Amino acid sequence: MNLDEIIENFGYLDEWEDRYRYVIELGRMLEPLDPEAHTDANKVLGCASQVWLETKVDRSGQCEPVLTFRADSDAHIVRGLVALILALYSGKTASKILETDAQALFDQLGLSAHLTRQRTNGTRSMVERIKRDARLAVETTTA
Image (cartoon, rainbow, N blue to C red; front, side, top):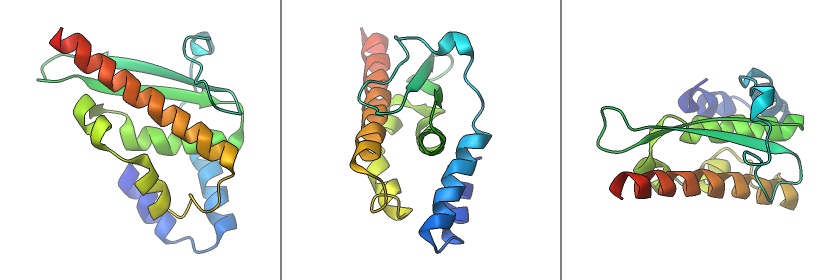
């Protein structure tokens, strides 16, 4: 599901409980991460739940690298938040990733006001890891 569809669907949901269920449903639709990718190297530090993030960098045919992400979590709601973050960042150029503000999306969807501090810190850790990978992709391209 792409980000525009997700935003549109959130627009139809007025109650927080409905939005919460939708986030969980997004997690259920997330393509599973291969068990071999559940490694310490892929683990996102700073998340209360287990979260693994796999990054692929494509440098073919473009002026700058495009990053694709796959991820997984052991918690239903976190898996949904992961799906939302992937919809925002995966398949984008490194510069687009670095300029995109995930917090703005969470505010727009009304999620910021309802997430616990732990969940907020976890999503922030995941976004920081994605942006770090984007910066590394740019540095490796220009080096």
